[in-house]
Length: 90
Image (cartoon, rainbow, N blue to C red; front, top):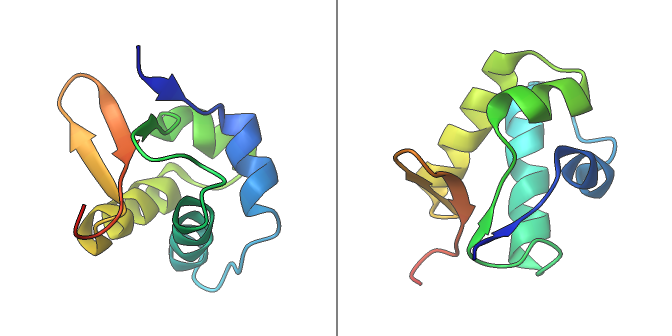
């Protein structure tokens, strides 16, 4: 069974991230907590909708932040399963 992390836990971990622009600040904060192990590898991240509500940001902010994570190699989208953490280069 895959690990999951709640939207509330992610909100606590990323704290008061830089909001100019918000998607980049959120992506940077997520890279930090994935990179240092506070969110373990191969953990399912919350849905965009759940994280949007927990952080009080727009859905576009979360969508773009997740896209940044995927492009940087810190996340992988699995069709029908969600977005999972990883690190660049495996």
